Image 1 (cartoon, rainbow, N blue to C red):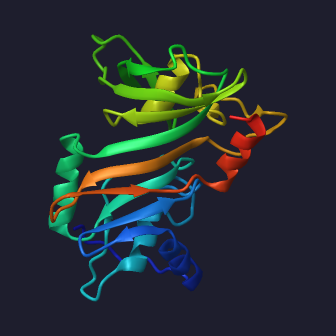
Image 2 (cartoon, rainbow, N blue to C red):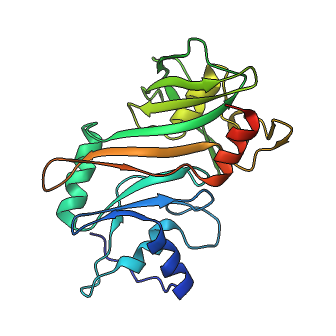
Length: 242
């Protein structure tokens, strides 16, 4: 575990992050991250989820560490290790693709064609000033990162669709770029062409939710943890009738 200076949290912040716990034991901590909260770092001068993990610090000064990240405007399940061995175990599980992530997205333009399948599209990182994008590129591009996503359409009409996604690789913005590349950008995803209005109303943020995490537990067996779809995404879906 990393050694770092503790972050002072308010009673409200401690109560808030503890209210987001989906599962906790001596080895792992699973949280339901709300949209708008950065996982780590970032330029916004506010506490990140990583900072808020000080709410779970033990008497020896150790605290959980995130195993992976979610984009700031993506909601849902995120995993942390409670101990150094657990963190190492979970990190290796992710590298070995033994952690299965499932997302839900609302996309514009109706159902993808085909309604389900695989997207294999290499991506490269592009930086403009202090901002970073991922761009599709040929497999033989010198900066190409192989990326693979699976998807299936759960519900659709002429205007939008609810799509379930499973990333087989873990590139930055992978699902967002892959859906945009097949002509179905995620609603609210300004960076990659998603609409800010749908169903005669505003789309408040990126309509992407990490709904389910299936991972090996350091003590054996597997855990499957789910996070409920947040109210803002439910409202947009109901407005769109999908």
